[in-house]
Structures are given as C-alpha cells and as structure tokens.
Image 1 (cartoon, helix red, strand yellow):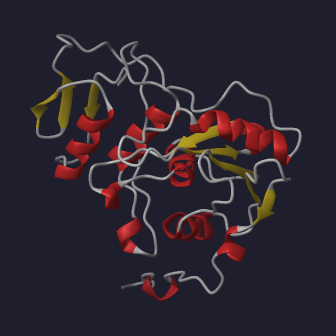
Image 2 (cartoon, one colour; image 1 turned 90 degrees about the vertical axis):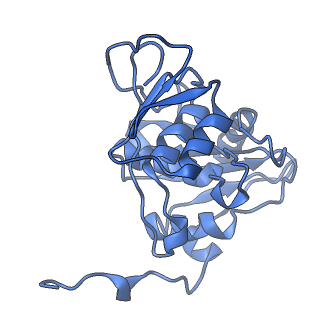
Length: 232
C-alpha cells in the first residue's frame, strides 16, 4: 500500500531451480523500487512474513516498519492507512523504443534508480510487453547477497504479478560494465518464461548485442521431470 492509497501486487514465481523462486513480498517491493515509489506505508501478506522478507522491507524503504499482525506490516510513522484506491500502473510513460539502441538508452536511465547499497553496481532492464507497454526493472539488494533481486527478474516479476505473460523484447544496461550479460539466475528464469525473446544488451559506444535466453543458457534444466502427473 502506498501513501496515496494506490497498491502494488506481488505473486510467488516458481522456478525449476527451487532456490531461484521469487517470493510475493520481494516481487511487490522490488516493483515499488523500479517505479520509484518509496512511499510504502503498509504491506499485507497471505501468510506470516519470513525473516529475509522483513530485512528486505526494512533495508529498502524508509521506516521503521512494525508488525501490526503476523501478516501485516505498517510504517510506524503512519497513524492511519489510506483506503485502497487503485492498483498502481507498472508501465513507464515512454513510447516504445524505435530501435535497440533507444531501448538500451532507456535501460541506462532506469539503472540510475537501482537500490545497490551493497555493491554499487546498478543495472537497468526494460521489458517490452508489446501493446501493454514498457515495464522497468532494477537490481534491489539485500544484506544477504543470495537474496538480491536482479533487474531482469524484477521486470519479469512485475509483469507476471500484473497478469502479463506476453513479452516482445528486453533491453539491459550495466552502468559500470558495458560488456556485462545476465547472471546465471536471470538466465534460468528468462529461459523458463520467455526462451526465444530477444534480449538487447548495452555495449557502450558500439551497437547493442542482441541474443535470446535459450542462446545464453543452452541445454538448460527445464524441470520437466518434476512436474506432477495427472492423478498423482
């Protein structure tokens, strides 16, 4: 819940690699960071919060937050919570990039808003969802580096939390390393959710390098054998 009554959804996104599951709390909070909405005043969960979720909340947003109930957190400076008004739009106001370079430049601007108190290594992502619009993603860090959410997974998590499952393209930019590529965790989630989607990566003064998740992670683990069979 934001200070003006708008709210941000977050859902759990599972991965064939169990350790890469993105929790609903992290999804919602990282969406808020990417959209530059730090005015979170409350958060409600469908089950009791876990320790790493509490830390993620306290380290990323002005607080402190207090546990009003086992599944509700309220910023202690807010005596009253505004009534819900509307779901916050996840889309940028920018027009669809005319070419890969324009998309990468937008990702560079987005990277400036990353929450990188641990590494000082900002990354920006722009997920082109076709006629729906453009969704930003930035890396949002956690004191436990295993809990960091990367820009690519941030953008994907936002889209899925809002019920969007059709992606046309992704643009990436790393301000401190123009030859960087998605980390292994992002490659796994990308190849599971959008294996053939073009990804255009910043290459500084050179033309962006474009590839696909399945090219970045050949012979990936799909988890096909883990799926439940009918009647079991």
